[in-house]
Length: 338
Image (cartoon, rainbow, N blue to C red; front, side, top):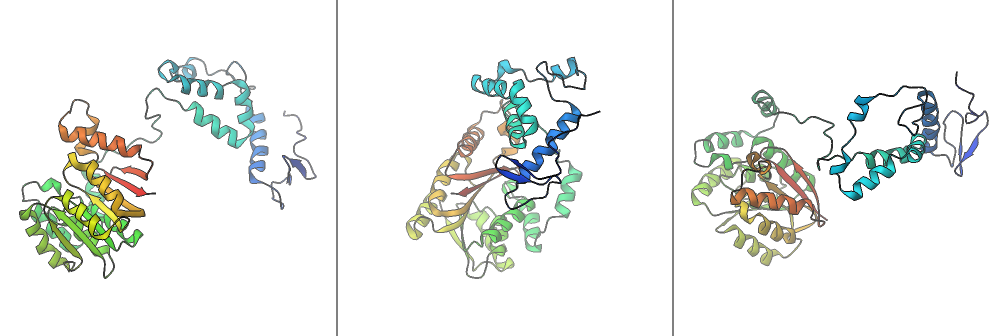
């Protein structure tokens, strides 16, 4: 039987300068964190608090199985080992057991894994043909886009076209930003430009940059069929020069969104130009950042794969943007300019 805890009193008591009601209700200066402290303390007394030898009062040692699950600290950097060691000390463990914030901090510090990725608490989804078919059935796709996708499938380089779920995500980004001015580096047959232009308000403009006359001829037909030809301004020629031309014409911070889907070896240059073109709070979205899985295969060392690896590493550490890589299609990176 547990000893009676004086912590649970009939009258309110003061905890760290704040008043708590015995039933956890809040007064003017009460804190829900302090109420959590009380509940945590009671739970810990019931379960037993961790002791110096790794066992808990009132429980038995889990034995070799628990010890075998401990991270191999010899492969962890010295600073991380020091943090983990400090956080796992008995004193810190006892303190963390009764304070939610300290408990969270200790958990973060001890979650040091020999692998740089850390633990996989949620298994990644294997995108089978059945799951992808289900995804497509639940993706909104305009009839013109569907027709364009079917025609493009017969062309050389058809895999350069963005996937339907990517087009839907690009359209959503345009709507969320209420984008009035968009630049696209790499248009191909026009799927992504149509998806974004359909999501733009009247008066919006999308500048489509590409150097393939054959691909743009297809894009023009479908721009007209989709009724967005007046919103799209074609920029034929080298995309680097076209982007620099837009910078000279409109100045810095003049675009809401930029989409990069062109020469992979030039991604860094496109990115830097768009970072000047796009306004603070605007988005730069980059396609093919997973490059058909090649970026994760260390045996693949071709120039395009290496360029994407270097670009991904650079953007991951670029403090000028808020960044997230999303495994949609062949991988999209979202970079919000700060």
